[in-house]
Length: 256
Ligand SMILES: NC(=O)c1ccc[n+]([C@@H]2O[C@H](COP(=O)([O-])OP(=O)(O)OC[C@H]3O[C@@H](n4cnc5c(N)ncnc54)[C@H](O)[C@@H]3O)[C@@H](O)[C@H]2O)c1
Image (cartoon, rainbow, N blue to C red; front, side):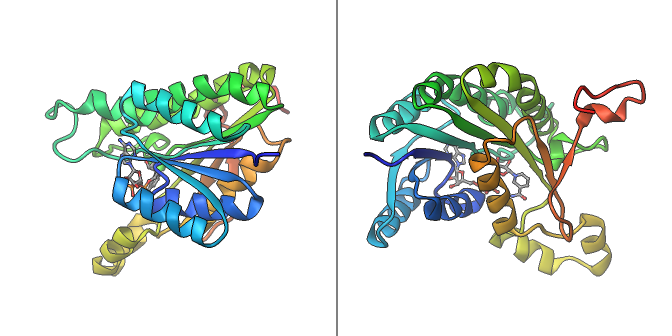
C-alpha cells in the first residue's frame, strides 16, 4: 500500500524545511512544492538518501495553474492526507500603496492556500479524510500599524478562511487549522536579531523556534480532533489557542 501523502508548499527552505523534517518521522511521503528548484531537488534527494519518501515539484505558487499541477502531482503518488499551506511572505520592493505587486502578495498569501485547499478537499475525502494547516502570521493578527498592509490583510484573511471553512471541510472529513507565528528564528532573523540593540530585541518580542512552529503544525495535521484552531506562537510561551472573535465583548462563542 502506498504511503499517505503530505504536501508542504514552500517546503524547500525556511519554515517549510522544518515542517518537512517534522513530517517524515510520521511516515508521510512528503511532496515539496517550491519555486527554488535547486534547493527543492537537493532536499528531496537528501531525504531519499536517508530512506525517507519525498518528491519535489517545482512550482511558483502565486500562479493558479502551478498550484493545480502541484496538487495533481501529489495525488498521483498516493492518498493525499495532509496539506501545509506554508509558502508565503512579504514580496520585495515597496509595499501598498506605492508598489504594484500587492495583488501578487494577496495571490501568494491568501488565494494560493484557498485554491490549494479547495483542490485538496475532494481528494482528501476520497482518501478517507485529511487535514489542512494554514500558516498565517502575527502580521495578520495585530491591530498596530504594519509595514506591508497587503501581507497583513492576506494573513488576516487566511485566519478567517480557516475558521469559516470548518463546516465545509468536515463534510469532506477534513480538519482545518491555522498557526499565527510571531517572528521565527530562521537564520536570517537570527542574524538580524543579533545586530539589534537590547531595547530593539525586547520590543521585537524575541524569536520563536522554527522547530516549535513546525511541530505544532504537524500536531495539528495529525490530530483528528483538532479543527478550527487558531494557534498563536510567541517566543518564550507554549503555543496557545485564541478565538479571534473574543475581542468583541458581545460575542458568545458556540464552543463555550
Ligand atoms: N519568517 C517569519 O518570521 C514568519 C513569521 C510569521 C509567519 N511566517 C510565514 O511562514 C511561512 C514561511 O515563511 P519563511 O520565512 O520560511 O519563508 P521564506 O521566505 O524563507 O520562504 C520559504 C520557502 O517558500 C518558497 N517560496 C517563496 N515564494 C514562493 C512561491 N511563489 N512559490 C513557491 N515557493 C515559494 C521559498 O523558495 C522558500 O523555500 C510564510 O507563509 C510566512 O508568511 C513567517
